[in-house]
Length: 181
Image (cartoon, rainbow, N blue to C red):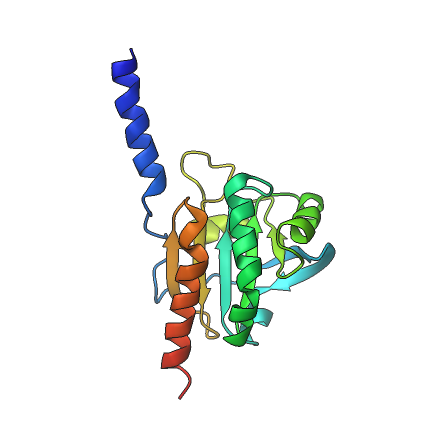
């Protein structure tokens, strides 16, 4: 029995660690959205259109607040917020979690540095094709860099949280270098 289960577990492990292609490709128009969000425990309405008026937006989807990978990712984004701001970018995290849970997550794990939004009906996750296929009640770990004109300039999907911040920062730096003339 173990001889049959072990290869399947190995394949599943490999499948979960390999980056999957992000659903919306570069050059696509980012779907507009407005969601209830929280930063530092304070609730407000986040509008992608309004954020894009100020500069690029780094939009990242994550499966669930207070899980190991999502906590690590939130810490990394919080640590890098000043770098994003120096590039004129706004960071927003989105999950299916209810707002009251995100109020706590925004303080403890996001360190009050950037907002997280509640997409409880998964409307935004679906519009960005960021649903985790194996567990459709959750978002897939997908990050986008969206230019001020609403064009997606970078997309990355991987359940491994370790490269999302570095990859989006690099993509943002490249976009900024090309558009700072």
